[in-house]
Image (cartoon, rainbow, N blue to C red; front, side):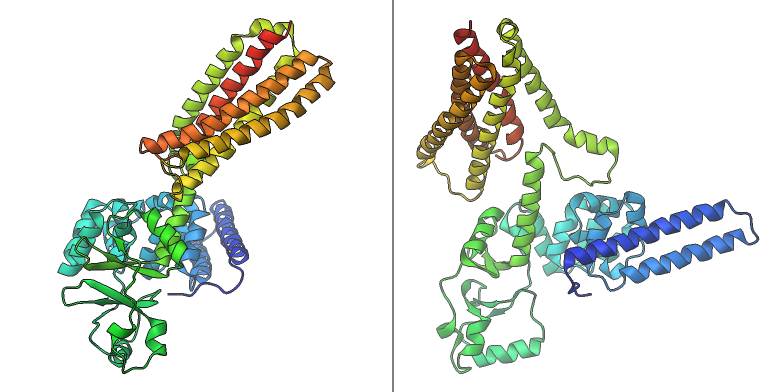
Length: 480
């Protein structure tokens, strides 16, 4: 497989994408012009021209790393994407399917027949096949299972039996095991005979005759200690390991906390089942981060930017509908105070300020809570203290910025009562926003729902409605 480029990756990929897009555009233009021309041997000329463009495009793709090709495919419209995909060498198909986003993978797989899919996936490791399994047709999976040996079939079925966001879903089987009763010299000779180590190997796993994990031997200790020393004397027995059903986000935090490159995965009997590597953790963190950002924006799932209008629209319907309902409720709140607004027209221009600053405060609080929940920093013992802290922040910010807005309102309209209403409404709405910023993500977390999904939409709706109600309610009481 080709190595990634050594030039700055973003600049290189943008330049390469521009060249490929230019070639595709040139091909379309020349073929369109040719179709309008009447000439002898028209079909032959068109075929030769098409092949010329195909050769030029393939020359650009040859030697590229699979991740670079995946980036190019994701950035191309559907028709151009499939044209480039058909030029990619079959030996890279499987790895590229792993590298592209889930949404783009669907379009590529739909363009492949069963034979092509089987050829692409047969080149992959068992854990990589498991990653693609949800997107593969049933008949292809059946043929893949039949083509694997007993060990491979057992491993694949074991991976597929676990939930998506568990350590088992991130696990691979690229590991080296040794016994504790041999010397380091024996281990070195074994590694030389083996010839190649799995990627990201920084340690060897020490097991007994029942494959139970006893410890790990780092490559650093292996090469810096005397070859005559036994493994049992040099290996580390205090090992960071994971169980198959451990949550993937917990494993990600452990990798960050302990600066791990790899770690063993065991079953309930402490028997070694596989390992989890930093590459899988990085991919998981990136995917989780992307999903969280999409969820915060109210998107139900990852979306191919070049997918059809109907599919993209449906992906956005749910939270748009929620937003529409909450916006309508906010207008009903305003409608309750029509008489007050008619008496003091300035209220119409000032009330969005109160709602807006409350929404900002609520989102700040909720983002902090969502992050803290993801890191496991919040527990029943510290929720009350956290609540008091956020209320204190809301009180301080409400006093400071409420005073500022009250003075501005007085300066603009020369009405002391209006200034007091503005200051009081800002203070109260910031307190409400702090409470909602805590309650919404904590409540969703308590119900077993993703605290990040739709939190921004819900908070904005609540702080807008409460902001209007508090501001106009105070105005009704204090303004003549």
